[in-house]
Length: 154
Image 1 (cartoon, rainbow, N blue to C red):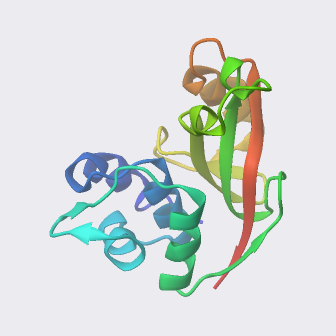
Image 2: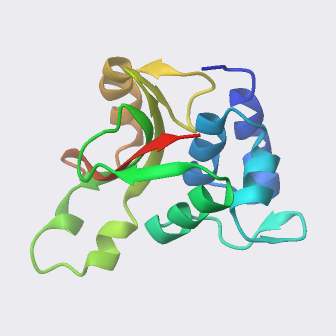
């Protein structure tokens, strides 16, 4: 688990049009962001076609990067990626699901460490929850859950 590429992800995310999902995959793979983007996602020249990553996009990226992925449902994986759902009025019954999708965030997980695009290093899950998570939560958010966890292997 290296931090050698972490600062690079943040610096180059804007140039490539990358977001949290692209960077989380690159961090888990421990490869430069540009390699993860060109290998796993659809590019239009030097920029990503879409600046966001949904579950089908990420599952396709796993296949393209030759990563074995197994869904672990609504739990954090021990070694993989997790799509975080910020809880709030957008997750109440009757609200269209697409509204909740606008309040999601990808992180990489290795044991008790988490990598988040908003950091430049791997952090303990406990510290991420206590500090980073609080800063990331949208206004009116009431907490977070895992929308989908993926256990990964190479």
